[in-house]
Length: 515
Picture 1 (cartoon, rainbow, N blue to C red):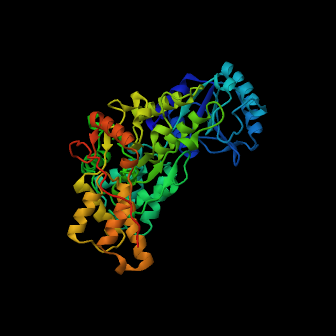
Picture 2 (picture 1 turned 180 degrees about the horizontal axis):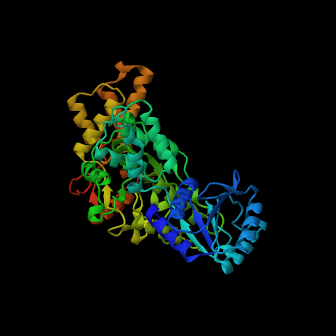
Picture 3 (picture 1 turned 90 degrees about the vertical axis):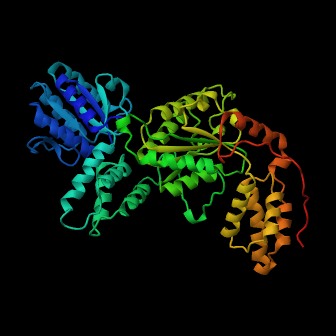
């Protein structure tokens, strides 16, 4: 990625070196032209800018030098002047259809060939790639949206002129937080968001949270990712104290200034373990408690039928996540998308694994990955080594005290009357071997009976019957669960924060009919 300073210095060297063709990739045409305007003041090289609305204008005087607004007309003007004068630079801002061999790309190609002998330079600002034969005549530059440092300057320029006009509660820490949130938006997008907040006549500390919501709206439909809506009131996580404590520490790192110590932001966590024990729920819980948008990466949705399509879609998804940062990226059942030792003869899976590992290692944006896996044996070993994710947690079947917490959470959530303390203790015992989803299902069955028959129908016997009717996965597939738990015992931290204990696999209940 290229920030403004790096981009400006590189472009200056290219102008001075008289590179005949310069392709600038950016979605911010105005910002690129502002930088070129600054460079035009530094170096005495004639520069002209072509647009479909103004034709060809002198970048310094702003005067129109050719009123033919068509791209072909602009190219003809450049060809004519390059043949007569040395060291001219022409910037084209709205050229389409340069990705392949066509009339326009050929026309520009001929213009560039002529510019080589006359010290001329043709510069194209576009969001797309350029025909390979044309690109080989020159060089490419990319200007990414403002990073945190540049965004901090933009935020200050937007806010500080109004410090005597209305109350501004932000201190330096708030300015940096705003810059962190707005980073990777375009300059105009950030200015619009800030102006909207200031239009109400004040800037409070609560507006920091609103900045996140405004950015979330802009990135609600981004390439390769699915925006997940979260209702914090519907989220409750019982147990997993070890994971929650670790996450509290990571949240501090996500908002801290790590540049002085040369540390990258937290990369994320891989949650493996027994199905139905809260791995996926944890991703939503993290996003809600951290007040960050949640995006879901679905590997099945990015699979393409053409060569290279899947890899390109995955790359776009990661770029989208970087631009939406800070955010949570949820990858559910990652083993289904990045399974090792598959029969993929084309090598697509191998390349996607490599692409994912490279992004995990090299991305410096504040994207916190929450990946979940049920069958971790299918994952490639290189994904599990230390340094890929910040930590690897094993989510086991809940212990006795955790089951008590989870049962309580669901009873309160469903607005049910509490069973007697004696029955409650019995439910905790009966639910040995239950996953969190099993406990939720048992309490939901009670709630359904309350809806059908009224709250008076809810009693201790109903609770016991509903719990006894649940047959957990630990009973139907004990070998599978034992294998998963044995793997987690040796290779991951317990998400519960408790030491690993063997599971007492005793069947003490039978299904009975609710009467």
